Length: 192
Image (cartoon, rainbow, N blue to C red; front, side, top):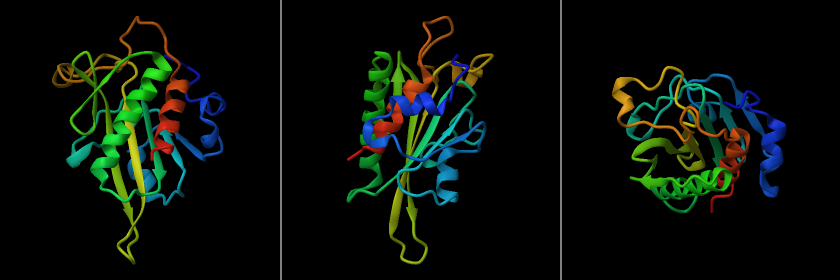
């Protein structure tokens, strides 16, 4: 399960050239990388990466189970001249391409923000605007991706077992979580 994850030096080694100097903030455990990105007023180009989230969120206020073993990342980027839904859709396709580039595993996008493998949700995308309280203008967008790389220790709960999955099942070939994280970070930072 990649005991060396996250390794900033290995992640930086795999980042695309235009992303190598981005500030990366690593958390062992956090409520939500998106929440922290909005709360902490991180500058554009910042990356927040967590090994585990205790309050992972999805669209429409839904919770997102984020146990140890996954990749939970948020990036702070400039807003587009479009709506958040279009950014969410673009981010979903970017994450699918990043996963395939890092692992050769083909996944599929369903709905606006869900990524599936073998009929089970393995990743969720959440894009949120950061609004200037004085001007009400959106100054930045935080895009988060939560990817279940391995099943949680002890497996998913009975409620989640029928809908949630992981990129790699127990016993499958090992994957490089640092490389996957770097591909996702690069893809999200370079969204246009």
